[in-house]
Length: 491
Ligand SMILES: *Cc1c(COP(=O)(O)O)cnc(C)c1O
Image 1 (cartoon, helix red, strand yellow):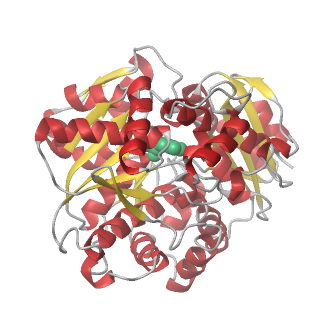
Image 2 (tube, helix red, strand yellow):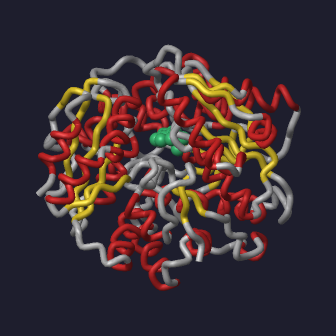
Image 3 (cartoon, helix red, strand yellow):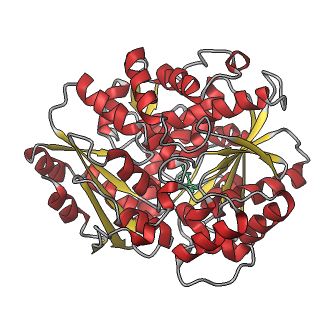
């Protein structure tokens, strides 16, 4: 059985089920599998198989303490008709690349890929581990995780879900999606601060032993739906494997040929999942990490120095407005192999806001390329691919496509590329409409309608009539008041 251990070397090794419930290790490190399982099949043998088959095999290989029947039930519950696209994840050829459309779930962003299965993995884990406490899911969101987690956990027995979002750092559509959330166990708070404030606040709560004791006394236990939870990460590995199989099926590659992957990156979770897919056996030549103007990762990849000592920008790709990419810690662990080194780097980050990695880690990063797009370049990319190929992409995916084009121009590398397409254009309708030169509208919802009229691309059901839904969660709190909000949400 694969054990899950801390990136920082402390804490207790755990089964996957126990790591999923716990969210984060006792020593504040993130759980990583002590070894990465090999693909349980030859990709070429999976051609024509449905998404669920691939997901079952990949997730089952990592979470081998779950029985095959348990994994099957989780996958069946998650990837059903909630997904509005044929076979869950369409792979679309446009703009000289292959877009892995990950946004056809209920909340119209890729976060649904993991957050529609996490509640199943979590409730199964609770049963397996005989956990008797109520699970309270704490989530910091830059806009998309919050809604996807709320949809996933709404009215799931034995859970409460509490979400914190930056009150002025998300799009109008994203905000309304969260504030109209139904379900008796859902709690949503805007905070006066940015995403890093929300994420740091939530991490501090996890680290606060006295607070956790209080929560315990109330019969509850905290867990996380952020990508620090290994139960978020592993389901994401499946779609890179699936994308690779699709490229074989389309005749773009032969089994065993390399591909490039391009991922618009914030917390480094999605791109790390592609790295896990490669460690399982999917041949990836380059991992192209795309950032917006908050280009802390681009600079890190180019220099080996990670520094948060810089201005923070609110951009038109808000789900990537992040300076502290928490999942990078997992990559550092895999490249270093030395948890003491990771612990030291993370301590430098929290005390000084900066660290520089060793030569060993630096060498391991040779398959990682970084680039960024500013806001105008993002809009230009949306216009260009729409004009040339009649293909509609959102602002985050546009960042990725622009960075990919830069990479290709610079290197001449024509290896077929999978681009993670992370959100429906309708979630960021105002900026997408602006990119397409459309006239100004009154509000975000009017842009949704106008964009549908112009492009004919159907609006995802979850985004329809959002402006007519009742707002249920209007609270905005200070960034030092998260603990009270959590305590007030326990029942
Ligand atoms: C969350 C998100 C990202 C960034 O993903 P990470 O896993 O945090 O790197 C990119 N695009 C969209 C639309 C997102 O919601």
